[in-house]
Amino acid sequence: MTRPIQTVALVGNPNSGKSALFNALTGARQKIANYPGVTVERKSGRMLLPDGEPVELIDLPGSYSLDPSSPDEEVTRAVITGQQDGQRQPDALILVLDANNLEQHLVFAQEIIALGMPVVVALNMVDLAKRDGLVLDPGALGNALGVPVVETVAVRRRGLSELGDVLGQAADRQNTAPIISDNLDMSERRISARAMARAAILSETRQRRLHRGLDSVLLNPWAGPVILLGLLFVMFQAVFAWATPFADALDGAVVALSGWVTATFPENLLRDAVTEGLLAGVGSVVVFLPQIVILFLFILLMEASGYMARAAFLMDRMMAFVGLSGRSFIPLLSSFACAIPGIMATRSISDPKDRLTTILIAPLMTCSARLPVYAVIIAAFIPARTVGGGIGLQGLVLFALYLAGIIGAMLVALVLRRSVAKGGASGFIMELPRYQWPRLGDILLGLWQRAWIFLRRAGTIIFSVTVVLWLLLSFPQAGPGEDQVDVSIAGRIASGLAVVVEPIGFNRDMALALIPAMAAREVAVSSLATTYAVASDDEDETAEALGDRLARDWTLPMALSFLAWFVFAPQCLSTIAVARRETNGWKWPAFMLAYLFALAYLAAGATYWIAVSAGL
Figure 1 (tube, rainbow, N blue to C red):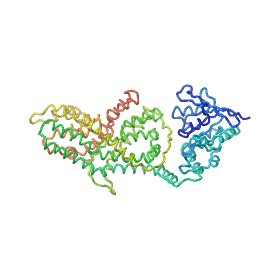
Figure 2 (figure 1 turned 180 degrees about the horizontal axis):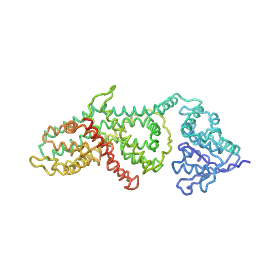
Figure 3 (figure 1 turned 135 degrees about the horizontal axis):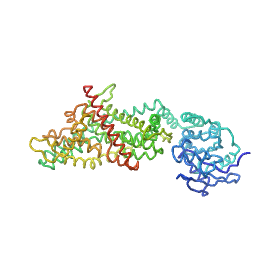
Figure 4 (figure 1 turned 180 degrees about the vertical axis):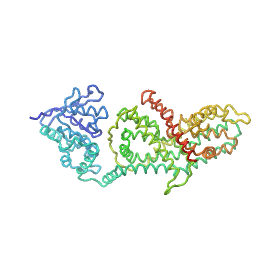
Protein backbone atom coordinates (compact mmCIF):
# COMPACT_ATOMS: atom_id res chain seq x y z
CA MET A 1 0.00 0.00 0.00
CA THR A 2 1.42 3.36 -0.96
CA ARG A 3 1.74 6.33 1.38
CA PRO A 4 -0.39 9.34 0.41
CA ILE A 5 1.42 12.46 -0.76
CA GLN A 6 1.51 14.89 2.16
CA THR A 7 4.81 16.72 1.72
CA VAL A 8 6.44 17.78 -1.57
CA ALA A 9 9.82 19.52 -1.98
CA LEU A 10 10.83 21.80 -4.84
CA VAL A 11 14.43 21.15 -5.92
CA GLY A 12 16.61 22.49 -8.71
CA ASN A 13 19.61 24.56 -9.68
CA PRO A 14 19.73 28.23 -8.74
CA ASN A 15 18.03 30.50 -11.29
CA SER A 16 15.74 27.73 -12.55
CA GLY A 17 12.57 29.66 -11.64
CA LYS A 18 11.97 27.47 -8.62
CA SER A 19 10.91 30.28 -6.28
CA ALA A 20 8.55 31.69 -8.91
CA LEU A 21 6.91 28.27 -9.24
CA PHE A 22 6.64 27.99 -5.45
CA ASN A 23 4.88 31.37 -5.26
CA ALA A 24 2.52 30.43 -8.09
CA LEU A 25 1.57 27.12 -6.46
CA THR A 26 1.12 28.39 -2.89
CA GLY A 27 0.04 32.04 -3.32
CA ALA A 28 -0.26 33.73 0.07
CA ARG A 29 -0.32 30.42 1.96
CA GLN A 30 3.39 30.60 2.92
CA LYS A 31 5.51 30.45 6.06
CA ILE A 32 9.11 31.60 6.34
CA ALA A 33 11.51 30.54 9.09
CA ASN A 34 15.02 29.13 9.45
CA TYR A 35 16.08 25.51 9.54
CA PRO A 36 17.16 24.37 13.04
CA GLY A 37 20.82 25.07 13.75
CA VAL A 38 21.53 27.05 10.54
CA THR A 39 20.75 30.46 9.08
CA VAL A 40 19.39 29.03 5.82
CA GLU A 41 15.86 30.26 5.16
CA ARG A 42 13.03 27.70 5.24
CA LYS A 43 10.03 28.48 3.00
CA SER A 44 6.95 26.28 3.07
CA GLY A 45 3.38 26.70 1.93
CA ARG A 46 0.16 24.84 1.26
CA MET A 47 -0.99 23.82 -2.20
CA LEU A 48 -4.06 21.90 -3.26
CA LEU A 49 -4.05 18.86 -5.52
CA PRO A 50 -6.80 18.53 -8.17
CA ASP A 51 -8.85 16.34 -5.83
CA GLY A 52 -8.77 19.06 -3.16
CA GLU A 53 -6.18 17.27 -1.01
CA PRO A 54 -3.86 19.77 0.73
CA VAL A 55 -0.10 19.24 0.39
CA GLU A 56 2.76 20.98 2.20
CA LEU A 57 5.18 22.39 -0.38
CA ILE A 58 8.78 23.13 0.66
CA ASP A 59 11.01 25.40 -1.40
CA LEU A 60 14.52 24.00 -0.93
CA PRO A 61 17.63 26.16 -1.53
CA GLY A 62 19.03 26.01 -5.05
CA SER A 63 21.73 23.35 -5.43
CA TYR A 64 24.16 22.17 -8.05
CA SER A 65 24.93 18.83 -6.43
CA LEU A 66 24.00 16.48 -3.61
CA ASP A 67 27.67 16.58 -2.65
CA PRO A 68 27.31 19.81 -0.66
CA SER A 69 29.81 22.67 -0.94
CA SER A 70 27.74 25.29 0.91
CA PRO A 71 25.25 25.47 3.83
CA ASP A 72 22.39 25.79 1.31
CA GLU A 73 23.35 22.55 -0.43
CA GLU A 74 23.85 20.80 2.93
CA VAL A 75 20.26 21.67 3.91
CA THR A 76 18.89 20.50 0.55
CA ARG A 77 20.63 17.14 0.86
CA ALA A 78 19.57 16.71 4.50
CA VAL A 79 15.88 17.44 3.76
CA ILE A 80 15.71 15.17 0.71
CA THR A 81 17.35 12.26 2.55
CA GLY A 82 15.29 12.79 5.75
CA GLN A 83 18.30 13.76 7.87
CA GLN A 84 17.31 17.35 8.69
CA ASP A 85 16.30 17.81 12.33
CA GLY A 86 12.65 18.79 12.70
CA GLN A 87 11.86 18.10 9.04
CA ARG A 88 10.26 14.90 7.72
CA GLN A 89 11.44 13.43 4.46
CA PRO A 90 9.30 14.59 1.51
CA ASP A 91 6.90 12.10 -0.05
CA ALA A 92 7.66 13.41 -3.55
CA LEU A 93 9.85 15.93 -5.34
CA ILE A 94 9.15 18.53 -8.01
CA LEU A 95 12.39 18.91 -9.96
CA VAL A 96 12.52 22.30 -11.71
CA LEU A 97 14.62 22.56 -14.88
CA ASP A 98 15.36 25.65 -16.93
CA ALA A 99 14.45 24.84 -20.55
CA ASN A 100 17.01 27.35 -21.80
CA ASN A 101 19.86 25.68 -19.88
CA LEU A 102 18.61 22.13 -20.01
CA GLU A 103 21.95 20.39 -20.47
CA GLN A 104 23.44 22.06 -17.41
CA HIS A 105 20.40 21.39 -15.21
CA LEU A 106 20.19 17.73 -16.23
CA VAL A 107 23.47 17.04 -14.43
CA PHE A 108 21.84 17.64 -11.04
CA ALA A 109 18.56 16.08 -12.23
CA GLN A 110 20.26 12.70 -12.65
CA GLU A 111 21.44 12.76 -9.03
CA ILE A 112 17.91 13.51 -7.81
CA ILE A 113 16.18 10.86 -9.92
CA ALA A 114 18.77 8.22 -8.98
CA LEU A 115 17.57 8.48 -5.34
CA GLY A 116 14.47 6.49 -6.30
CA MET A 117 11.93 8.91 -4.82
CA PRO A 118 8.74 9.90 -6.69
CA VAL A 119 9.80 12.78 -8.95
CA VAL A 120 7.89 15.07 -11.29
CA VAL A 121 9.90 17.34 -13.59
CA ALA A 122 8.69 20.91 -14.19
CA LEU A 123 10.30 22.01 -17.45
CA ASN A 124 10.15 25.70 -16.64
CA MET A 125 10.54 28.89 -18.70
CA VAL A 126 9.67 27.15 -21.97
CA ASP A 127 8.37 30.48 -23.26
CA LEU A 128 11.84 32.02 -23.03
CA ALA A 129 13.34 28.98 -24.74
CA LYS A 130 10.87 29.29 -27.63
CA ARG A 131 11.59 33.01 -27.84
CA ASP A 132 15.26 32.14 -28.27
CA GLY A 133 14.48 29.59 -30.97
CA LEU A 134 14.43 26.34 -28.97
CA VAL A 135 11.47 23.92 -28.95
CA LEU A 136 11.73 20.85 -26.70
CA ASP A 137 9.87 17.54 -26.58
CA PRO A 138 8.82 16.87 -22.95
CA GLY A 139 7.80 13.31 -23.82
CA ALA A 140 11.25 12.41 -25.15
CA LEU A 141 12.85 13.98 -22.08
CA GLY A 142 10.50 12.07 -19.79
CA ASN A 143 11.35 8.77 -21.49
CA ALA A 144 15.08 9.46 -21.07
CA LEU A 145 14.70 10.36 -17.39
CA GLY A 146 12.07 7.77 -16.53
CA VAL A 147 9.82 10.34 -14.83
CA PRO A 148 6.91 12.52 -16.05
CA VAL A 149 7.82 15.94 -17.48
CA VAL A 150 5.39 18.89 -17.51
CA GLU A 151 6.00 22.16 -19.35
CA THR A 152 5.49 25.21 -17.11
CA VAL A 153 5.79 28.98 -17.22
CA ALA A 154 5.64 29.85 -13.52
CA VAL A 155 5.41 33.63 -13.90
CA ARG A 156 2.34 33.22 -16.16
CA ARG A 157 0.83 30.30 -14.16
CA ARG A 158 0.94 28.06 -17.22
CA GLY A 159 1.10 24.30 -16.68
CA LEU A 160 0.23 24.44 -12.98
CA SER A 161 -2.96 22.34 -13.24
CA GLU A 162 -1.17 19.71 -15.36
CA LEU A 163 1.64 19.65 -12.79
CA GLY A 164 -0.90 19.10 -10.01
CA ASP A 165 -2.54 16.23 -11.94
CA VAL A 166 0.75 14.43 -12.42
CA LEU A 167 1.82 15.09 -8.84
CA GLY A 168 -1.42 13.56 -7.56
CA GLN A 169 -0.45 10.30 -9.29
CA ALA A 170 3.08 10.34 -7.82
CA ALA A 171 2.14 7.96 -5.02
CA ASP A 172 1.58 5.25 -7.63
CA ARG A 173 5.23 5.52 -8.65
CA GLN A 174 6.68 4.95 -5.19
CA ASN A 175 9.12 2.05 -4.98
CA THR A 176 9.64 2.15 -8.76
CA ALA A 177 13.27 1.56 -9.66
CA PRO A 178 14.75 4.62 -11.45
CA ILE A 179 16.34 4.18 -14.85
CA ILE A 180 19.10 6.67 -13.94
CA SER A 181 22.13 4.97 -12.39
CA ASP A 182 23.51 6.31 -9.11
CA ASN A 183 27.04 5.07 -9.95
CA LEU A 184 27.89 7.78 -12.50
CA ASP A 185 30.62 10.32 -11.71
CA MET A 186 30.35 14.00 -12.59
CA SER A 187 32.02 13.59 -15.97
CA GLU A 188 29.69 10.72 -16.95
CA ARG A 189 26.64 12.69 -15.82
CA ARG A 190 27.69 15.63 -17.97
CA ILE A 191 28.06 13.40 -21.02
CA SER A 192 24.66 11.83 -20.33
CA ALA A 193 23.07 15.24 -19.79
CA ARG A 194 24.36 16.45 -23.15
CA ALA A 195 22.93 13.40 -24.92
CA MET A 196 19.50 13.71 -23.26
CA ALA A 197 19.28 17.45 -23.91
CA ARG A 198 20.05 17.02 -27.60
CA ALA A 199 17.60 14.13 -27.95
CA ALA A 200 14.83 16.32 -26.51
CA ILE A 201 15.26 19.06 -29.12
CA LEU A 202 12.42 19.28 -31.64
CA SER A 203 13.76 22.35 -33.41
CA GLU A 204 16.22 25.17 -32.86
CA THR A 205 17.36 28.21 -34.76
CA ARG A 206 20.56 28.45 -36.74
CA GLN A 207 21.97 30.82 -34.12
CA ARG A 208 21.51 28.29 -31.32
CA ARG A 209 23.14 25.58 -33.43
CA LEU A 210 26.04 27.95 -34.05
CA HIS A 211 26.40 28.64 -30.34
CA ARG A 212 26.30 24.92 -29.58
CA GLY A 213 28.97 24.35 -32.23
CA LEU A 214 31.15 27.05 -30.69
CA ASP A 215 30.82 25.42 -27.28
CA SER A 216 31.78 22.04 -28.71
CA VAL A 217 35.10 23.61 -29.79
CA LEU A 218 35.79 26.24 -27.13
CA LEU A 219 34.87 23.88 -24.26
CA ASN A 220 36.63 20.87 -25.74
CA PRO A 221 39.07 19.52 -23.11
CA TRP A 222 41.89 19.44 -25.68
CA ALA A 223 41.19 22.25 -28.15
CA GLY A 224 39.72 24.67 -25.58
CA PRO A 225 42.88 25.25 -23.50
CA VAL A 226 44.96 25.65 -26.67
CA ILE A 227 42.56 28.33 -27.94
CA LEU A 228 42.59 30.11 -24.57
CA LEU A 229 46.39 30.06 -24.45
CA GLY A 230 46.54 31.35 -28.02
CA LEU A 231 44.14 34.18 -27.20
CA LEU A 232 46.24 35.24 -24.22
CA PHE A 233 49.36 35.06 -26.38
CA VAL A 234 47.80 37.36 -29.00
CA MET A 235 46.72 39.73 -26.23
CA PHE A 236 50.26 40.19 -24.93
CA GLN A 237 51.67 40.52 -28.42
CA ALA A 238 49.16 43.30 -29.05
CA VAL A 239 50.11 45.10 -25.83
CA PHE A 240 53.48 45.90 -27.41
CA ALA A 241 52.78 45.84 -31.15
CA TRP A 242 49.65 48.02 -31.10
CA ALA A 243 50.65 50.37 -28.28
CA THR A 244 54.17 51.30 -29.42
CA PRO A 245 53.22 54.24 -31.72
CA PHE A 246 50.92 55.78 -29.08
CA ALA A 247 53.40 55.21 -26.24
CA ASP A 248 56.20 56.78 -28.30
CA ALA A 249 54.00 59.81 -29.02
CA LEU A 250 53.23 60.28 -25.32
CA ASP A 251 56.88 59.83 -24.41
CA GLY A 252 57.86 62.43 -27.00
CA ALA A 253 55.29 64.85 -25.62
CA VAL A 254 56.62 64.45 -22.06
CA VAL A 255 60.22 64.98 -23.23
CA ALA A 256 59.21 68.05 -25.28
CA LEU A 257 57.28 69.51 -22.35
CA SER A 258 60.24 68.94 -20.04
CA GLY A 259 62.53 70.67 -22.52
CA TRP A 260 60.15 73.61 -22.81
CA VAL A 261 59.96 74.04 -19.03
CA THR A 262 63.76 73.91 -18.80
CA ALA A 263 64.22 76.50 -21.56
CA THR A 264 61.45 78.82 -20.39
CA PHE A 265 61.84 79.09 -16.63
CA PRO A 266 64.92 80.09 -14.63
CA GLU A 267 66.84 77.41 -12.77
CA ASN A 268 65.41 77.07 -9.27
CA LEU A 269 63.89 74.53 -6.92
CA LEU A 270 60.41 74.84 -8.42
CA ARG A 271 61.64 74.12 -11.94
CA ASP A 272 63.55 71.09 -10.67
CA ALA A 273 60.41 69.85 -8.93
CA VAL A 274 58.48 70.05 -12.22
CA THR A 275 61.14 68.52 -14.47
CA GLU A 276 62.74 66.00 -12.10
CA GLY A 277 59.64 65.15 -10.05
CA LEU A 278 56.41 65.68 -11.96
CA LEU A 279 57.46 65.19 -15.60
CA ALA A 280 60.26 62.67 -15.10
CA GLY A 281 58.36 60.67 -12.47
CA VAL A 282 54.65 60.83 -13.24
CA GLY A 283 55.25 61.28 -16.97
CA SER A 284 57.27 58.07 -17.12
CA VAL A 285 54.18 56.16 -15.91
CA VAL A 286 51.54 57.95 -17.98
CA VAL A 287 53.27 56.95 -21.23
CA PHE A 288 52.15 53.36 -20.58
CA LEU A 289 48.45 54.26 -20.76
CA PRO A 290 48.12 52.70 -24.28
CA GLN A 291 49.33 49.31 -22.99
CA ILE A 292 46.81 49.47 -20.13
CA VAL A 293 43.96 50.32 -22.51
CA ILE A 294 44.83 47.48 -24.93
CA LEU A 295 45.05 44.95 -22.10
CA PHE A 296 41.61 45.90 -20.83
CA LEU A 297 40.20 45.95 -24.36
CA PHE A 298 40.82 42.21 -24.60
CA ILE A 299 39.45 41.53 -21.09
CA LEU A 300 36.28 43.54 -21.73
CA LEU A 301 35.70 41.80 -25.08
CA MET A 302 36.07 38.39 -23.43
CA GLU A 303 33.55 39.34 -20.73
CA ALA A 304 31.01 40.95 -23.05
CA SER A 305 31.06 38.11 -25.60
CA GLY A 306 30.34 35.40 -23.02
CA TYR A 307 33.75 33.76 -23.40
CA MET A 308 34.99 34.62 -19.91
CA ALA A 309 32.63 32.17 -18.16
CA ARG A 310 33.72 29.44 -20.59
CA ALA A 311 37.35 30.16 -19.77
CA ALA A 312 36.44 29.47 -16.12
CA PHE A 313 35.16 26.02 -17.10
CA LEU A 314 38.34 25.33 -19.04
CA MET A 315 40.47 26.30 -16.06
CA ASP A 316 38.42 24.16 -13.67
CA ARG A 317 40.16 20.94 -14.70
CA MET A 318 43.67 22.41 -14.35
CA MET A 319 42.84 24.10 -11.06
CA ALA A 320 41.47 20.85 -9.65
CA PHE A 321 45.02 19.46 -9.73
CA VAL A 322 46.10 22.09 -7.20
CA GLY A 323 43.03 21.75 -4.99
CA LEU A 324 41.01 24.68 -6.37
CA SER A 325 37.97 24.83 -8.61
CA GLY A 326 36.74 27.00 -11.44
CA ARG A 327 35.03 29.16 -8.80
CA SER A 328 38.47 30.65 -8.11
CA PHE A 329 39.08 31.52 -11.75
CA ILE A 330 36.92 34.65 -11.92
CA PRO A 331 38.51 36.26 -8.79
CA LEU A 332 41.97 35.36 -10.08
CA LEU A 333 41.19 36.72 -13.52
CA SER A 334 39.88 39.91 -11.92
CA SER A 335 43.25 40.19 -10.20
CA PHE A 336 44.90 40.72 -13.58
CA ALA A 337 43.25 44.14 -13.47
CA CYS A 338 43.77 44.69 -9.75
CA ALA A 339 44.08 42.29 -6.83
CA ILE A 340 41.68 44.36 -4.70
CA PRO A 341 38.45 43.52 -6.60
CA GLY A 342 39.87 40.03 -7.16
CA ILE A 343 40.17 39.40 -3.42
CA MET A 344 36.72 40.90 -2.80
CA ALA A 345 35.27 38.62 -5.51
CA THR A 346 36.28 35.56 -3.46
CA ARG A 347 33.12 36.12 -1.39
CA SER A 348 31.34 34.00 -3.99
CA ILE A 349 33.46 30.96 -2.98
CA SER A 350 31.56 28.97 -0.37
CA ASP A 351 34.36 26.67 0.80
CA PRO A 352 36.39 28.64 3.43
CA LYS A 353 39.73 26.89 2.70
CA ASP A 354 39.21 27.33 -1.04
CA ARG A 355 38.45 31.02 -0.50
CA LEU A 356 41.48 31.54 1.76
CA THR A 357 43.79 29.93 -0.78
CA THR A 358 42.41 32.13 -3.56
CA ILE A 359 42.97 35.26 -1.45
CA LEU A 360 46.56 34.26 -0.67
CA ILE A 361 47.50 33.63 -4.32
CA ALA A 362 45.58 36.56 -5.87
CA PRO A 363 48.63 38.91 -5.59
CA LEU A 364 50.58 36.53 -7.83
CA MET A 365 48.30 37.40 -10.73
CA THR A 366 50.08 40.11 -12.73
CA CYS A 367 47.95 43.20 -12.11
CA SER A 368 47.86 46.09 -14.55
CA ALA A 369 50.03 48.16 -12.18
CA ARG A 370 52.96 45.86 -12.96
CA LEU A 371 52.61 46.45 -16.70
CA PRO A 372 54.53 49.77 -16.72
CA VAL A 373 57.41 48.10 -14.86
CA TYR A 374 57.48 45.20 -17.31
CA ALA A 375 57.10 47.46 -20.33
CA VAL A 376 59.96 49.84 -19.48
CA ILE A 377 62.41 47.02 -18.69
CA ILE A 378 61.44 44.91 -21.71
CA ALA A 379 61.66 47.91 -24.04
CA ALA A 380 65.12 48.78 -22.68
CA PHE A 381 66.70 45.31 -22.77
CA ILE A 382 64.72 43.10 -25.16
CA PRO A 383 65.24 43.95 -28.84
CA ALA A 384 62.14 44.83 -30.85
CA ARG A 385 62.49 42.00 -33.35
CA THR A 386 60.51 38.95 -34.39
CA VAL A 387 61.26 35.30 -33.78
CA GLY A 388 59.80 32.23 -35.47
CA GLY A 389 57.07 33.25 -37.86
CA GLY A 390 56.72 36.92 -37.06
CA ILE A 391 56.21 36.55 -33.30
CA GLY A 392 57.38 39.67 -31.47
CA LEU A 393 60.14 38.90 -28.97
CA GLN A 394 59.04 41.66 -26.59
CA GLY A 395 55.46 40.37 -26.51
CA LEU A 396 56.77 36.84 -26.00
CA VAL A 397 58.75 37.93 -22.94
CA LEU A 398 55.69 39.76 -21.54
CA PHE A 399 53.61 36.62 -22.08
CA ALA A 400 56.27 34.58 -20.25
CA LEU A 401 56.15 36.95 -17.26
CA TYR A 402 52.37 36.65 -16.97
CA LEU A 403 52.65 32.88 -17.40
CA ALA A 404 55.30 32.75 -14.66
CA GLY A 405 52.88 34.47 -12.27
CA ILE A 406 50.10 32.01 -13.13
CA ILE A 407 52.36 28.96 -12.73
CA GLY A 408 53.72 30.37 -9.48
CA ALA A 409 50.18 30.88 -8.18
CA MET A 410 49.20 27.31 -9.04
CA LEU A 411 52.30 25.87 -7.34
CA VAL A 412 51.68 27.96 -4.23
CA ALA A 413 48.03 26.84 -4.21
CA LEU A 414 49.18 23.22 -4.43
CA VAL A 415 51.38 23.69 -1.35
CA LEU A 416 48.75 25.64 0.58
CA ARG A 417 46.00 23.08 -0.10
CA ARG A 418 48.24 20.40 1.34
CA SER A 419 49.35 22.37 4.38
CA VAL A 420 47.82 25.48 6.00
CA ALA A 421 44.64 25.40 3.87
CA LYS A 422 44.35 21.65 3.53
CA GLY A 423 41.40 20.39 1.54
CA GLY A 424 40.27 18.95 -1.78
CA ALA A 425 38.81 20.70 -4.80
CA SER A 426 35.08 21.38 -4.57
CA GLY A 427 32.67 20.87 -7.44
CA PHE A 428 32.08 23.72 -9.87
CA ILE A 429 28.95 24.35 -11.88
CA MET A 430 27.78 27.69 -13.21
CA GLU A 431 25.38 29.02 -15.80
CA LEU A 432 26.95 29.79 -19.17
CA PRO A 433 25.78 33.09 -20.65
CA ARG A 434 24.74 33.31 -24.28
CA TYR A 435 27.27 34.36 -26.88
CA GLN A 436 26.68 37.89 -28.07
CA TRP A 437 28.40 40.64 -29.97
CA PRO A 438 29.92 43.17 -27.55
CA ARG A 439 28.26 46.57 -27.69
CA LEU A 440 30.68 49.25 -28.83
CA GLY A 441 29.29 51.78 -26.38
CA ASP A 442 29.78 49.43 -23.42
CA ILE A 443 33.36 48.64 -24.47
CA LEU A 444 34.26 52.30 -24.92
CA LEU A 445 32.71 53.16 -21.55
CA GLY A 446 34.65 50.35 -19.88
CA LEU A 447 37.92 51.51 -21.47
CA TRP A 448 37.29 55.09 -20.40
CA GLN A 449 36.63 53.99 -16.81
CA ARG A 450 39.84 51.93 -16.70
CA ALA A 451 41.88 54.72 -18.29
CA TRP A 452 40.45 57.25 -15.84
CA ILE A 453 41.29 55.01 -12.87
CA PHE A 454 44.87 54.72 -14.14
CA LEU A 455 45.22 58.48 -14.73
CA ARG A 456 43.64 59.25 -11.36
CA ARG A 457 46.22 57.03 -9.67
CA ALA A 458 48.92 58.84 -11.63
CA GLY A 459 47.52 62.19 -10.51
CA THR A 460 47.09 61.25 -6.85
CA ILE A 461 49.04 58.30 -5.43
CA ILE A 462 51.90 58.29 -7.94
CA PHE A 463 52.16 62.09 -7.95
CA SER A 464 52.20 62.29 -4.13
CA VAL A 465 54.75 59.53 -3.70
CA THR A 466 56.93 60.95 -6.48
CA VAL A 467 56.97 64.43 -4.93
CA VAL A 468 57.87 63.00 -1.52
CA LEU A 469 60.62 60.91 -3.11
CA TRP A 470 61.95 63.96 -4.98
CA LEU A 471 62.14 65.89 -1.71
CA LEU A 472 63.95 63.02 -0.01
CA LEU A 473 66.35 62.83 -2.95
CA SER A 474 66.95 66.60 -3.07
CA PHE A 475 67.76 67.21 0.58
CA PRO A 476 70.21 67.78 2.07
CA GLN A 477 71.87 69.51 -0.85
CA ALA A 478 75.14 68.00 -2.06
CA GLY A 479 78.34 69.98 -1.82
CA PRO A 480 80.96 70.40 -4.56
CA GLY A 481 82.08 67.05 -5.94
CA GLU A 482 79.41 65.09 -4.04
CA ASP A 483 76.73 62.88 -5.58
CA GLN A 484 73.29 64.28 -4.76
CA VAL A 485 71.66 60.84 -4.41
CA ASP A 486 74.44 59.61 -2.11
CA VAL A 487 74.05 62.44 0.39
CA SER A 488 70.23 62.61 0.26
CA ILE A 489 67.93 61.09 2.85
CA ALA A 490 66.48 58.66 0.30
CA GLY A 491 69.96 57.69 -0.91
CA ARG A 492 71.11 56.82 2.60
CA ILE A 493 67.99 54.68 3.18
CA ALA A 494 68.54 52.94 -0.15
CA SER A 495 72.20 52.31 0.63
CA GLY A 496 71.17 50.43 3.77
CA LEU A 497 68.62 48.34 1.88
CA ALA A 498 71.10 47.69 -0.94
CA VAL A 499 73.17 45.53 1.39
CA VAL A 500 70.22 43.12 1.64
CA VAL A 501 69.39 43.00 -2.08
CA GLU A 502 72.90 43.20 -3.51
CA PRO A 503 73.26 39.37 -3.61
CA ILE A 504 70.31 39.18 -6.05
CA GLY A 505 71.87 41.73 -8.43
CA PHE A 506 70.16 44.94 -7.25
CA ASN A 507 72.07 48.21 -7.03
CA ARG A 508 71.23 51.22 -4.86
CA ASP A 509 68.82 52.76 -7.36
CA MET A 510 66.91 49.49 -7.77
CA ALA A 511 66.70 49.11 -3.99
CA LEU A 512 65.34 52.65 -3.72
CA ALA A 513 62.57 51.88 -6.23
CA LEU A 514 61.28 48.99 -4.10
CA ILE A 515 60.28 51.17 -1.14
CA PRO A 516 57.74 53.55 -2.76
CA ALA A 517 56.52 50.72 -5.01
CA MET A 518 54.63 49.37 -2.01
CA ALA A 519 52.25 52.32 -2.36
CA ALA A 520 51.58 51.44 -6.02
CA ARG A 521 53.55 49.15 -8.30
CA GLU A 522 53.78 51.77 -11.06
CA VAL A 523 55.72 54.04 -8.68
CA ALA A 524 58.79 51.84 -9.26
CA VAL A 525 59.02 53.37 -12.73
CA SER A 526 58.53 56.95 -11.55
CA SER A 527 61.01 56.33 -8.72
CA LEU A 528 63.71 55.24 -11.14
CA ALA A 529 62.96 58.17 -13.45
CA THR A 530 63.08 60.68 -10.58
CA THR A 531 66.27 59.18 -9.15
CA TYR A 532 68.10 59.41 -12.47
CA ALA A 533 66.74 62.90 -13.10
CA VAL A 534 68.04 64.12 -9.73
CA ALA A 535 71.38 62.37 -10.28
CA SER A 536 71.88 63.94 -13.73
CA ASP A 537 74.36 66.81 -13.96
CA ASP A 538 73.22 68.21 -17.29
CA GLU A 539 69.91 68.93 -18.98
CA ASP A 540 70.46 66.39 -21.77
CA GLU A 541 70.67 63.53 -19.27
CA THR A 542 67.60 64.79 -17.41
CA ALA A 543 65.56 64.71 -20.62
CA GLU A 544 66.95 61.31 -21.60
CA ALA A 545 64.34 58.55 -21.83
CA LEU A 546 64.26 56.24 -18.82
CA GLY A 547 64.69 53.14 -20.99
CA ASP A 548 67.87 54.54 -22.56
CA ARG A 549 69.31 55.35 -19.14
CA LEU A 550 68.52 51.87 -17.82
CA ALA A 551 70.07 50.20 -20.87
CA ARG A 552 73.24 52.21 -20.25
CA ASP A 553 73.52 51.68 -16.48
CA TRP A 554 72.13 48.18 -15.91
CA THR A 555 73.27 44.79 -17.13
CA LEU A 556 70.86 42.25 -18.63
CA PRO A 557 71.10 39.93 -15.56
CA MET A 558 70.17 42.91 -13.34
CA ALA A 559 67.17 43.71 -15.53
CA LEU A 560 65.97 40.08 -15.57
CA SER A 561 66.36 39.89 -11.79
CA PHE A 562 64.27 43.07 -11.40
CA LEU A 563 61.52 41.57 -13.57
CA ALA A 564 61.56 38.31 -11.57
CA TRP A 565 61.20 40.29 -8.34
CA PHE A 566 58.06 42.04 -9.58
CA VAL A 567 56.50 38.78 -10.76
CA PHE A 568 56.31 37.53 -7.17
CA ALA A 569 56.67 40.54 -4.84
CA PRO A 570 53.66 41.65 -2.76
CA GLN A 571 51.34 44.19 -4.31
CA CYS A 572 50.41 47.59 -2.92
CA LEU A 573 49.47 48.32 0.68
CA SER A 574 45.82 48.66 -0.34
CA THR A 575 45.82 45.00 -1.36
CA ILE A 576 47.19 44.00 2.04
CA ALA A 577 44.52 46.09 3.76
CA VAL A 578 41.74 44.42 1.76
CA ALA A 579 43.19 40.98 2.56
CA ARG A 580 43.12 41.89 6.26
CA ARG A 581 39.46 42.91 6.00
CA GLU A 582 38.44 39.78 4.09
CA THR A 583 40.27 37.42 6.49
CA ASN A 584 39.23 39.32 9.66
CA GLY A 585 42.74 39.79 11.03
CA TRP A 586 46.44 40.31 10.33
CA LYS A 587 47.47 36.64 10.55
CA TRP A 588 46.96 35.75 6.90
CA PRO A 589 48.05 39.11 5.41
CA ALA A 590 51.28 38.79 7.41
CA PHE A 591 51.70 35.26 6.09
CA MET A 592 51.03 36.57 2.57
CA LEU A 593 53.68 39.27 2.88
CA ALA A 594 56.26 36.84 4.28
CA TYR A 595 55.90 34.15 1.63
CA LEU A 596 55.66 36.62 -1.27
CA PHE A 597 58.80 38.52 -0.24
CA ALA A 598 60.67 35.23 0.24
CA LEU A 599 59.46 33.96 -3.13
CA ALA A 600 60.43 37.23 -4.86
CA TYR A 601 63.91 37.21 -3.30
CA LEU A 602 64.58 33.60 -4.28
CA ALA A 603 63.22 34.06 -7.80
CA ALA A 604 65.22 37.26 -8.40
CA GLY A 605 68.39 35.69 -7.00
CA ALA A 606 68.03 32.51 -9.04
CA THR A 607 67.34 34.54 -12.19
CA TYR A 608 70.36 36.79 -11.64
CA TRP A 609 72.88 34.05 -10.96
CA ILE A 610 71.64 31.84 -13.78
CA ALA A 611 71.87 34.80 -16.18
CA VAL A 612 75.38 35.66 -14.97
CA SER A 613 76.49 32.03 -15.26
CA ALA A 614 75.11 31.91 -18.80
CA GLY A 615 77.22 34.94 -19.72
CA LEU A 616 74.26 37.21 -20.51
